[in-house]
Image (cartoon, helix red, strand yellow):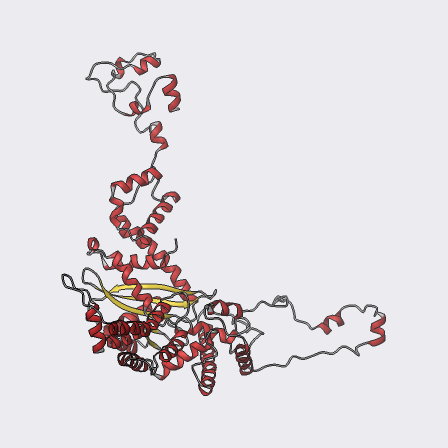
Length: 566
């Protein structure tokens, strides 16, 4: 239409949309042509256009450029993706007030109106947070065991925060890592106050499980040990990365090592000390001794694979490398002894030792347990049976409680593949299911009800002479567990670079009892690295320009950054 008017009638719609200085409507002739519509009076006092539109009627450009309603599907989709962009890229809320950003959005979708900053912070982002929160809660609800990590940090505004993360293995045997909350703590960082934060997180996210275990991994600070005890977080795993760090610090406290490090430290405007051949040789020995500690720290930073099962094998390997050799210089002897003695003091609690042995035994990479003797291996096998009993018993009690709840009229029928006291993963039925309305009859009954058919020559000759019915021997629950253990131990160990979770995914139905133990133990992280990684993310959120950011918004932004899937 616009092209037609401009080409045939020489009318420019852009000029018509602006107030023109044309003749008044009462002086307009009754007839009109293209030239008369184009020509205006030269009188500057006239303000009415030649063609006036009725009040409330949109012009052609306005009709095609009407704004999207905020509640329309298109507007909601754009707003949600805008929130995702801000959350995943850690953009400030003030970006919606930036004129260049508005022009960019207008170029992409002229009909869309960018939400204001208050709307974004008070409505859009909280709505996205609730959406992602419900998704995380549904995943947590399906988890058999949920392990936690916790650590504290201080923002640029000197506000203290505590971050809590959750770790579990989902139905597809993928190790999930979720950031649950980053809450400001205004009280003193005592064990009692931190315990209240941990209890509140467990209640808010419904992390408690029937088996009663709530694993927690944190640093070895005294307040965290008190908090874990008061919050009934068991087992409490001391961060293995912190253990390695503390052991390395013991090596650096040796006087000869400090003197060597002081000489290689470059000071501004001062001459560099010249190192002797002995110093260079000592430094090379020192790097060789401490390099395994760096390698172990790098291995433990992998959040996609189980790490709790690697603690004892790595400790055994480190202690082997730290054995004093005959040709070691005196300073290297001191370094090895200092690191080894510090490692010997870690993880001495009996329950933690048992947990780590069980985790290594259930990991197909380390199931041979070469760092243990025969008696210890037998004790680990026995303890794994106890873990199976504990998990099954707690699950049975949990099912019994559910049955007594109101509205639960029908009880679930026990599976025919296992005793009712030990629920196994649902296996596909090999036989067609019989509707409840139909009566169950045996094969002999069906044959008796069917009309007699003429027997074949073979049937007339042999009859039932060669028909032998075998009754399958019923196995007790303990026999099934022992059979699984023998089968598991007879299989080849997995290569070190392979994924134990993928192995268990392939063998879950062959080893149903042991797979429960694997899902129960392998989700526990050996370090508090997941919660410490939030520090860098939070540092990008609470920048110097956003030091006054509300703690609630800090929690929302960190949560979305770590959990949202684009």
